[in-house]
Image (cartoon, rainbow, N blue to C red):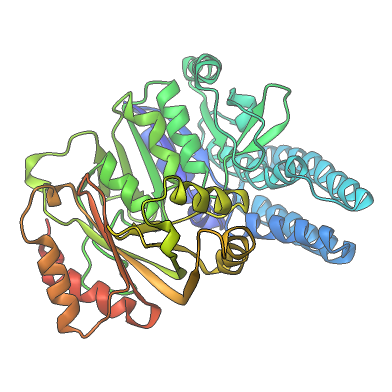
Amino acid sequence: MKLVLKYGGTSISSTKDIQLVANYVNALSKHNKVAVVCSATSGTTDDLIEISESIKKENKGKAEQLASKIINRHKQVAKQTIKKPELRKNLLQKLDEDFKEFNALIDGMVLLGEVTPRSMDYLNSFGERLSIKLVSSAIHDTGKKSSSLTGKDVGIVTDSNFGESKPLMDTTRLRVSKTIDLLFSKNIIPVIGGFTGADQHGHVTTFGRGGSDYTATIIGSCIKADEIWLMSDVDGLMTADPKIVKNSKLLKEVSYIEAIEMALFGAKQIHPRTFEPLISKKIPMRIRNSFNTKNEGTLVTASPSDLVKNTVKCVSSIRHNGLIDIRGGSMVGTPGTAAKIFATLAKAGINVMMISQNPSESSITIVVKNTDLDKAVNALEMELLGKIIKKLEVTTDVTIIALIGSGMRGTVGVASKVFGAIEKNKINVAMITQGSSELNLAFVVKNSDSNTAVKAIHDAFKLDKIN
């Protein structure tokens, strides 16, 4: 099979983990063509973001201290991981070249005293640039030829929207397939840096946080992979967060659309745009645990088998949000009211997570992240209060609870079962939405009630007996 394996930071953060990955990839490559995609090692991206914050605050000392921490950590792992002296020496030389460039970039940003989206992407790309060299050398150390490539090297071409770029798929497909097919023909395992590409001028761009999954599916789509495996520190997608529900179960199989909903509603393992390159090609994806390779994980396919068409697949929660109730008599029957409200929020750069409007049109309720709440209320008050809006009511610290499952479509009694379980636990519901696709049902409760609500629904639908 032609496989793309993506490793998250937690899977490649210590000598033991990297050697485990290298041996597994070596064994797998005996009967398959394998391309590997890597995130930065655990904590590196956070440190890089902190460096940029320190530069903004003109704290040069803090930025240099964090840079040294990253450099020393990678040097130490390199020395301990690679057994063959010649390979180790070669790796340390390559890393030193990166470290020089890394320090020069920080000096330049400190001199300018500013962090632009473009320089931020360049800085953030170093996490993956360093991790791929470690993993590629470790695979080489097991006796398999391997080559490390950044997103730019492999041929991922994107637009110039720094921080949230999108790939230009036609150009990318031609370049990536040519690069990787050449390596496959020479029995070389490519190890590709996730999260980054380059625009048409060759400037480094990133896909946003969690973008390594996206890189894996872009690569998979370009080389017509048979399967893509997202390897992390969890067994797969679960019926609920195991930290909240002790008897939550692993989901054996879900559809693309269910997995997209799960990604949007807080399944941390997946970047929401991950599925875009897969859907047209119908490439199956597995979400697996790199520390438990005997477990097959969760299979994500275009059309799952009838055996797994449960009404509800999972219940998830997104905590720490704010709810804004927007009221006004002049909103009733006035065309364009909602457009003005959402245009005002969009102009302020605020993402609205949930919307509900009552049929009388006298109020619209929206949910935004707690961190955006002040900005949202401020924008609405400045632009619209006293015009089309008469009153704003704000509730802080609420949680969105979402039930997801394509089997909910057309099934009678799902809502009554949900709200029966919620009522039994004396939980107050502040807002409810369900899309016409009936793929998810979402409602809002206080943060303090969220865990009880998740457990109550998990029990009501007997999700612990799902497979």
